[in-house]
Length: 409
Image (cartoon, rainbow, N blue to C red; front, top):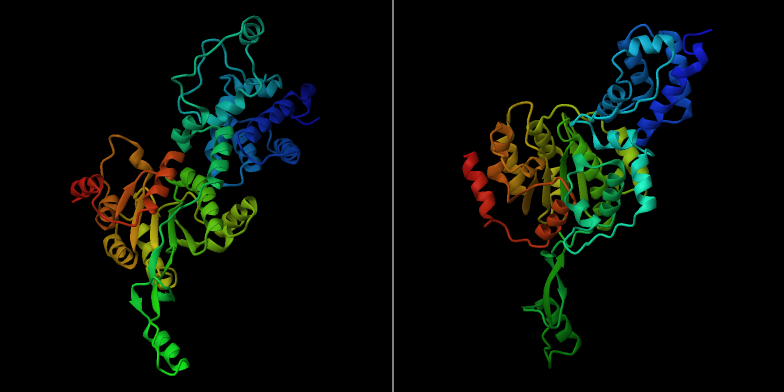
């Protein structure tokens, strides 16, 4: 008999419950992985806690962004201090928080929600059965308003799904700008001499009816450069849903992801199915949750892509926290070129959600002098503000931006 099968298979039962917690937290785990985990433990044994941890990690974790969720869930679920003795005797109970025992403050809301899913205190049940409580909602916020102001990093699994659904409905009412081409218009302000002479030749020259034209207007291209390094990974994955929505809402939207290298994911986000699009993006990008080389990645963009996508006054949206592994090397030069090549350069930084934010890092100081707008991006409300920014093509004059630039100087 194998160690996992001894004593009625209690360890196998708890592994199944642990897998359910991970699945509720968002990890793609099915019955097949539970069976694989049990078979793997039969080979490695239960002699050491580290071996137990890494065996389950090898089976259940297949992406870098899942590591932290697994780590938190493991240490909360298997939190008994006598874990080794319990495991060896195969009588480990399912994880429960004791009376007066509060969960750690740094536990992900997704893990907390998964661990308490389906748990209903008996006192609360009796209270609901015996009392009817009426609430005065005159001065309270609706659920939608609370969700709009909630930080992406603090959302539970259900709130994340609701936020993704809201992003898919977002639209960018970007203002149209004049182009170099003209179109015929009876009320135009400029005379179309070629059309006027052509009309005069058809009438023999006796009458010369004037023809008028005006400039064509078209929405400018949008180019998004999104940081997917370790410090930005959680926000980047949420923002991909927003980028997928705007890519399918209008033409000429180009999206690039960068960490230690630059990756063009525009064609993947054009897929109508969001699940297929994100799966293709994940397969194409190899530097998720790694370091950040902002200067080198912007150099690659300016050298290889700027002439292709920065046409007709493109609006550039840079999404990064400005924390550069190379200390901002080459960043001022590349930011200056990017700024000169775009109609408007908007910097979205999740660090601005902190009231005590100061531009201290070299990367932030190198970027700030070359942007037209500096805004936070950490919740749905900040994305809604972005739509108002893009609907106004005027640049400069923002006192907050000038204050940040003065602090960075």
